[in-house]
Image (cartoon, rainbow, N blue to C red):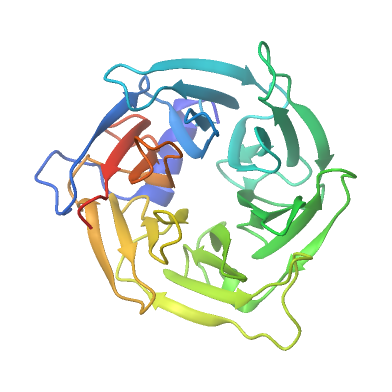
Length: 332
């Protein structure tokens, strides 16, 4: 994960063509909140109750950064910790107030996720001072843990997408016990001709349904889920939308209780607003734009100042580095 050879491989495999500067196709105003040095890939984010952003890094190491006061003209950025036992951090989700579950593991340019390296850590930001992540559990059977979400009605349960196995793990962060929560065809990447392929990527529970993106199928799906973190008895998978994009990554709902899904397209270099009827529109970025190039994840702010601001993280492209972009959705 730390080598430039790996970065070049990852770009060619998952991102596609280099990003060139040009006019955005998006309809909503946006601006850079903070930009990281070359070679930094920001994979995911969560928003603290105080409004600060927590970011996970895929490259060049497994770090969590905090962006304080993201609405300010020059927000402060600090590295809160690095987990040295793994090369990368991926999904992050709040469980109880100011306590977050974080996914980490190792990756090989030739084999994909390294089996046996992936695990779940817990980090408590509720106290002042140094934050020390605690290992909840390893999942030795996992291949490539990616997106994560908390079961709203049972916040001790965290759901994690395994992008290579094409399934969802369920982890009890109190006990460390884990099991397979869902394993359906629409989560996989069967038929891919590449050495390893990403199926399910981002996942979230919304209105008692588990929603997810599938990078290989370029579609968004949902299925009825219970508060125990499993598929409801008799439920069938529904296709929300088959999107005309080159890739799909994480997403979020909002602002507030709105049913709009805001979807990151990674190498598509855009953010889409996906309506409940399956129709979508580009709200930021464009095929040849670096505005939200390599968009990886999105979350709305949690304060009165930014609860309609969509914060988007980005990875590292040929001509871009990881950053946080703020999209004003007030006019949407």
